[in-house]
Image (tube, rainbow, N blue to C red; front, top):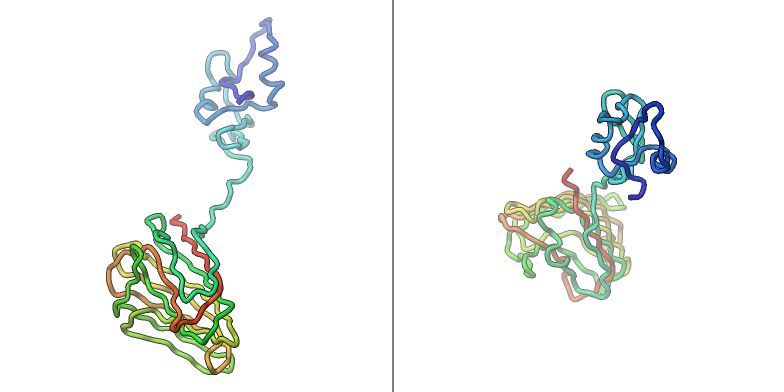
Length: 252
């Protein structure tokens, strides 16, 4: 970088100053250093300024302005960008599909836990919807899924969906005359060679009673299997249209 310097010089009485000497300060306003290493080496040497409280500098490696408070360097700004707790991984729109599966390796060693958001806005017949974990392109279809979801209907009716061992997690249903479905689930540790669990909630219109229903709860998979994907499946050959998004939870 043109403005970077490696020293902050001091001049003795009667010393001849060259244009290059003067341009160091005239061109930058404050000393500009490539890194903290060149910054620290620029003070206190022969013919260099002694580092003192109030000294300013700019670091081109991180694009920040710093000041010396008499004991240490502190950053004036800009503030570091906030780290998001959720990182977008994948998403897609599905149209007139009986089911959809996330891409292979959606779940990886990069994240332990994930959030999946699913919205459906059209179906061609009333359906129950289920979810299965998936590895290397194949759904896990053994009777190893347990779940318990508690719900409440818009008409005040209590609703529960549970199973101590079935071939999929049941995650709601969709009424073809009122095709509204929204689901938010956290998938916990699908990549680890241990039990995978889900926590979350869903809202939809109950079929065929035609009232809104909200469920919340969770479930787990009873085998210590490592998964890289999952499938969202309709119970009958009804085409579904909607979209999904998958996010990974930051580890720190």
